[in-house]
Length: 151
Image (cartoon, rainbow, N blue to C red; front, side, top):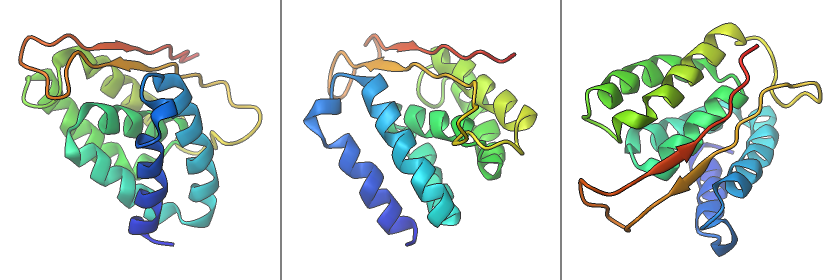
């Protein structure tokens, strides 16, 4: 399949107007797609999510973090670790999202051998991203809600 094909599938979800205002619906749909893709082309999915993480764009990066944690894509842990430092220092995204990066790192470390696509998964992510403007000024408000049971 390859990275470009995987990106095409994931990007098509971002352009769907039904998902524009509902980050949870988007996250659920992306996870269903990713669970299928990880079994068909894990490397393509990892490469596509690497692109989303490196973009440092709020919606793509946060959705990529969710998929990295949910699917336990430990291959991306070093990149998530590097981005965590940038987020905490204010160089990328907003420092308020640092906890999501930290949670992703913990989940990748603690459960790297489990499959999140299995029916018995207990990980639950609820994410809502609200943008105040298309290109927000420095004072824009971002709301990110994440529920992550770690036990």
